[in-house]
Length: 149
Picture 1 (cartoon, rainbow, N blue to C red):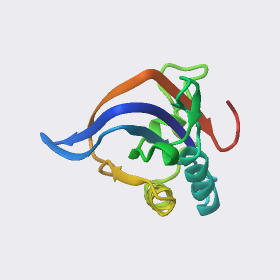
Picture 2 (picture 1 turned 180 degrees about the horizontal axis):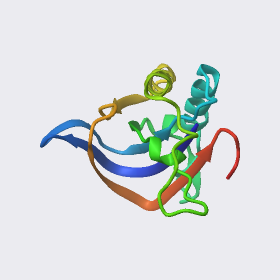
Picture 3 (picture 1 turned 60 degrees about the horizontal axis):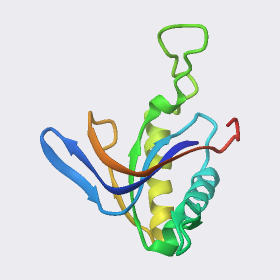
Picture 4 (picture 1 turned 60 degrees about the vertical axis):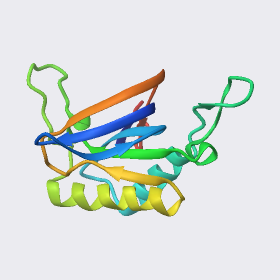
C-alpha cells in the first residue's frame, strides 16, 4: 500500500460539478492499493498515518499527530501511485490491485482510521475527481508498506 499524506488546512473532492467530500484541517491522503496488500496492511497503514507526527507543537516542531490535533482525513483512492514508468514513457499499472480488491482495502483503510477516532471523508471510488487542497507548510510525506521509499 502506498500513500501520499499532505498536511492541509482544507481539502475537497468534486465529482461532476458537485462537492462530494470536504474537510477542514487534517490530512489529504492519496491511497494506492497494491496486488499483494491485505487487510492487515490496511489497518497498519491507517495506524501509522493517524499517529504520524507532522503537526506543529507549541515550539513549532513537528511533534503532534492527526489524533493529537483532532484533525480530519480526506482519503482518495489513487491506483496511479503504483504506476511504473521506469524505462518507458507510458506507465505500467500491473502492480496495482484490481478494482474489487482495491475498493475493499480502501474502505477497510478508511474504516480503520475512523475506528481510531479520525473523522474521515472519502472520494468516489473509480470516479474522475477534481481534488482541491491547501497544503500547509507545505508538508508532504510518502509512505509505502513495503518500505521501498
